[in-house]
Length: 341
Length: 233
Image (cartoon, rainbow over all chains, first blue to last red; front, side, top):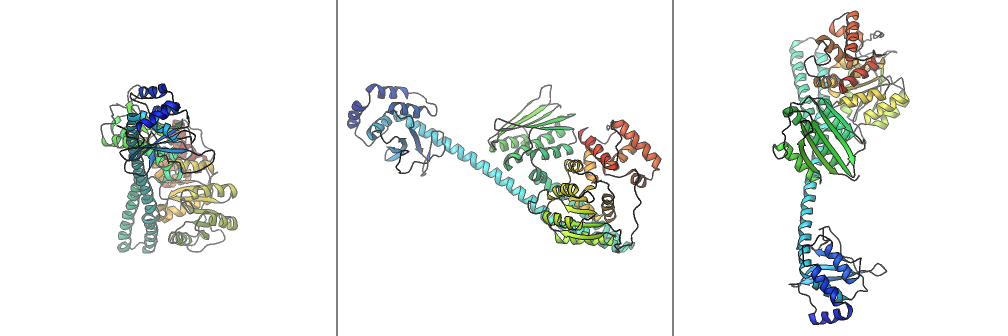
């Protein structure tokens, strides 16, 4: 049961003078059922006659407060002026359970009485707020992990480009100059030719490795350009349609790029398709990525680590991902990623 | 497509007719290496630049025949070289630009050709190790031609499969198509494939007819037409 530091009799006295009995009765009855987020606040606001009333909850074991949706919300500090708010902390067994933030003109005792009447509803909503806040923390941490991974991949690609790749290209030039000097002397020219051929192969391999780690064209020119580059390399003919050309936040570009790259790899490997389409569009604050082929179909997101990995990756940037049968057979991979930028 | 014969030059002796080159790359070692190679092959290295702003200053001052520039340079280390190529070609019609890159993308090649009227090149950076090919590329650009890396062309041709699915082109026609896409003139194609000018002309006509392309007015437009066809077909 909710315990409030004020004697019940005193509260009742207050209530009988300041609130109609029926209002409290209504509140108790109104809240005696599963509530949607926000309903508790609305009921308390109506009962107390303060439409701007806020209800915040303390995080478990933390000195931070969240709203009913689990979103961080600071308690207003002490301050004057017309915007001044009063904070009434409701306690249970000596621990803060909720804070009601309300008009200073409201009677403290009256606020506490309403909170007492809301009882179990406050306890329940606090638990829900805690779960939502934890879920949000897990999501945010997953996003940070993915972003850190992307940043690291970009850094590695950049280091390869400015370091090893550049040195190796300079080295091929030195070898070529040596080779010119060696002229027709086979004792010199044969090993130099062999070294140059080896080096050329190493440069090509390193180039492919760097592309796999993080394609430079994505960093340099953005998503539509990088997807066109994928299409240019695909053994299966791919048509690309993009209804925008502007840059998007890095993690969103990278996620969308890997969705297309992995999907096109699957098209080549498994779909036995004669062609594929990639559509990139922005609508209602979302980036929509659609990869459709005309192959044999049968791909499922739950099977195959590639598609599963994509699903996780898209979820990490709060997007949705699905794999479905394309009209007329074939497979359609669809990802929608929120992007307000 | 007529082409003036290259002027023979004594090695290491830049003459009054030597092609004047400005180099741009943020690596001093690489610049020095290229400068050596070019000087050894009869070019006059007029200046060097470590980033895009130095490059523009050098070009404005020296008005070289050709600029050889890395695609990625400070300050943003993204595609300064491409932007510089576009600007130089717009501001100095007589200066050609060869863009070098650690990786090549067909899209960038096509965009460069679209943005700059001829006298442009796009090559993998390690192509410089084939000195005679590299020197040839710089000369072709100085003479008004366009140069596209064979890897770009190979990338696009791979998409069309190894068979004759490319509108029934013969193997020989495919070879000639690839050379056209690299910016080679008919004359150069003759030399490469040991064919007579007449034979090459016939093949080129046949390729254009099979692909449904209109004959191009010059080598530059021919490269663009062929690359665009390969990307979109």
